[in-house]
Every structure is written in C-alpha cells, then in structure tokens.
Amino acid sequence: MNDEETYILLLLSDSNLPTGSFVASSGLESYAKHGFTTKSTSSIINFIEDSLGSYARSALPFVSDAHTLVDSFKRSRKDWAVKETNALDKTLKDIADLDELYETMTLNHVARRASKSQGVALLTLYSKGFSRPSVSGTDSDDENSHLNDLLERFKLMVRREETHGHLPVCWGALTAALGLSLTRSQYLHLFLHARSLLSASVRLNDIGPYLAQQLLMHTVRPLITKEAKRCKDLRSGLLDDVANEFDENIHGPANTWPLGEILAARHDLQHSRIFNS
Image (cartoon, rainbow, N blue to C red; front, side, top):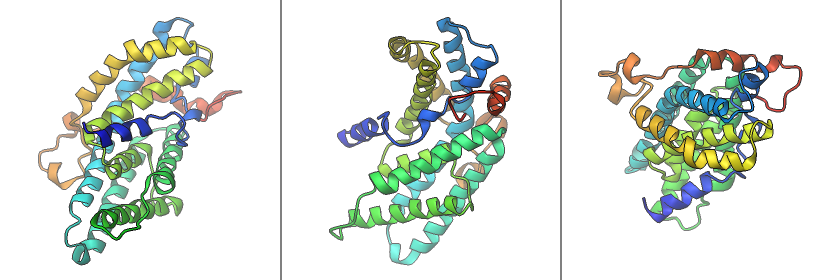
C-alpha cells in the first residue's frame, strides 16, 4: 500500500465526512426496542456479528462489481476520441443494472431508504469534495475529467430517479475513482458499517464511548477480517467476465439474517426513534 492509498484511507475513514451515516443504525434501534438487547456487551457483539455477516454477503458483491466497472473505465481511457461516448454510456448502463439488482434484493423499505440517502451523499462528496479540477490539460487531468463526467452523470440519473444510487454501488464507484484498491475498498466498507453500529449503540446508551472503542479495537476487528476474507470473491453475476461460471448459490449475494431484516423493516412503527433506519 503506497502513501497515496494510505491518505485516501484516512480521508474516507473520517467520521466527519458528510455521508449521512450518523443518522442510520442499520436496524439496531428497532432491534433494541423489540427487546433483543440487554445492557450486557455480548448482546451488542452478537448484533454486530450477525449484521456484519449479512451485510457483507449482500453488499460486497455490489461493491466489488461497481469498483470493477469504474476501474475498467479508467484503464480503458486510451483512444478516448474514438470510444469515449460508448465507454461512458456502457459503464453507466452496467452500474445502473447493478443498482437495480441491489434495489430488488433489498427487501425492506427502511434499508432501501437509508442506502439511497447515503449513496447519493457519496456521489455528492466526490463531485464537491474529492474531484480534482482540470487546470493544466495533462493526461491526468483528462482522466479526472472523464471520471468526473461518469460520476456526475450517474448522480444526475439518481436525481432524475432513473436509477436508485444505493450505498454499496456508489461506494464501489467512488473508491475506484479515487484509486483505492478493491481489497481495501471492501475492508473499509465493512469497517465503516461496524463502526456506525457501535456509534449508534453509544447514542442509544447501550454502551459507553470507551467501551465502543475497545470493542472496535479488539473484538470487532477479527469479525471484519473474517467477513472480508469470506466474501471478497463474491459477485453479482451481471458482469460478462463471470457470467459463464457464475453459480448464484455459491458466488452470489444473499441475505443471511432474516430476523434482522424483519426487525429493520419495523423501524418506522416505533412510537419514538432517533435514527432513520
């Protein structure tokens, strides 16, 4: 890992990034309100383990495929004058197809709502905070211009409701555009999911801030590593290079925690709530 990738990791792991994750509990609030948590640490750890396992199996295939699409778009930038429009349109269509599949596989409206709000926030973050302005007319500026066009058009499609802009798809596209490797993108995505669960648990007054950091350092780390390793090769099955050998039962996305899905879907039925998911 080079210094540039290290710097990108530091930027993306900043809790102050305006991505909307602060108002999401990923079902933890509903889980607690339905009486499935206690003040013991073990109940929080159990929730994180189940949530992380299900999210990794359902989301990482889309992170991986979106990352692959944008990375391929970057690497095919030779002879732009000939194939720029075709490459851009094809990549946008493929990303939109991924987005539609994730929408179909996300079973409850609460998770869909949270995923879409955080996804479009990532696209806005790239265009307003991470994209590099073209100033010198170099090849690097040319590449950045094409990446800016790609993500700006994708964001416009989301705004026009022509596609959904789900979080895993937008995360994969964003990290590929920034030059983060696929392995680091997958791992960081799971880390941020786990960290947001601990943050939500602190605000729900289930654990304290010091215990949250202790759990993140010692207990949650092996869970993230395990799920990242287990799901790193999963794919959606939509890309041409895996279509012939793809077995959706082995290589495809899946939801592995029905109870968490049901309780997350009941989030809006709470009489009072502090999170939007």
